[in-house]
Length: 112
Image (cartoon, rainbow, N blue to C red; front, side, top):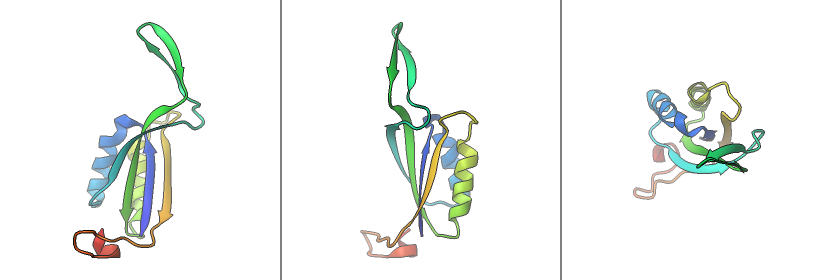
């Protein structure tokens, strides 16, 4: 099993969700986050005043899937979240040692 973490631009969430649904991904966790990378923050204008912010709003998506499905999930996220602009985000893939469904006690693949 793999844990795929994707940090994307907020307005791309629906496209990413639709792409993952087409692959048969059964669930995901979505969190509103803030951070920065090479973008180094951004300058905003609010009520006529310009100010700089160090943290850029992003969306973090977490998906646990079977190891054989992971490359297709990564490809789908990359294709659907891509705008070609700086700050499109990152995708991280980690190994998952164990999964347990709390309600039934099912483990690993059956818990997904």
